Image (cartoon, rainbow, N blue to C red; front, side, top):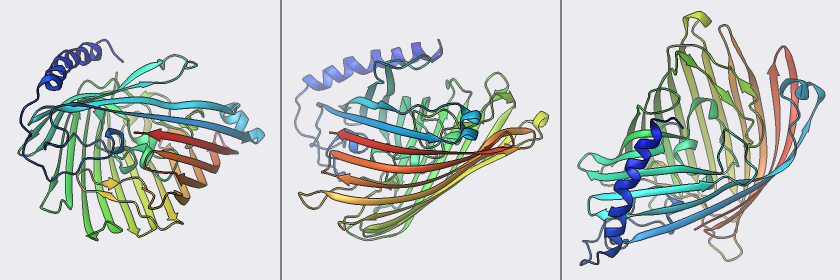
Length: 406
């Protein structure tokens, strides 16, 4: 985080916490009821608190813990390509969420994260994931601060809600950035959403993102729905350089595809989203492409995609979040929990022009056990094929995930 970003975050905090404390003390008459339905927990959706009487002006808290253990097996070629990937546990996240309404038209969201005791620089033990002030305006929710970018379905959605253990298209997005964002859902039934963000204080260069989604088909009980979306991202260069890199669906693995820093002016990115759900079956797919303005490297073009299938054996379906345009988590319909089978194939290609960042394809199969609305246990097996430096290597991994959120 640059020296410029810290004063901005500190200023937001100075504005946020006294106002939050004032909101906690005020006990005014209940506000008019809102049509929004609050989530069971702040961490089950990143929507701001509803304006109505349910959350009033009090401060509300949430928490989440994600723990992994990943075992790796590599052939000799893959070891030469990326080095040894040691099997290891990881505290994937230990996050606190504090949110609430300050006034009927103003809200706040604060989410610090503990990254574990064994992290090494440049990663810190404590990290501010989200810290922003939001305003309800006639054209949507306007937010200022550190927050998610509005680009790529699997990034916009909460990772704890996804069928897969890890996101795939990480060469093409950044998780958080410092700036402003506007989001809105249109129509009485909220079938269309739009969102846009400008992140001028981003440490990787000035960025702009936009996303629009449409649900042409959706049943009254949310058990059947069809989602399509188109996203755009402008990525400005930092010191006239850009870099694209990605991991093989494992947070503890090294980057498997990596362009390194190369001279460039900017990149334009497009992403296409598709999700179809019919009761317990769903299919998700995305395709991202980046056009890089880098004449010295012959203006390379990179791409990535994935196709994922999910089947909930116990019959539950993944409900749709109309306000944000993505699927929520599985909520078991019976005390014994819900079982979900997942299969996915993905590919990231960072070879183009004079840039040879590598190409990897990943096959994944896993099972999730949703014990209730708060606990999830997952076990997945993946095979990664990496083409880099005129060689082809294979890595296999077995990943255990335990997550709790409230």
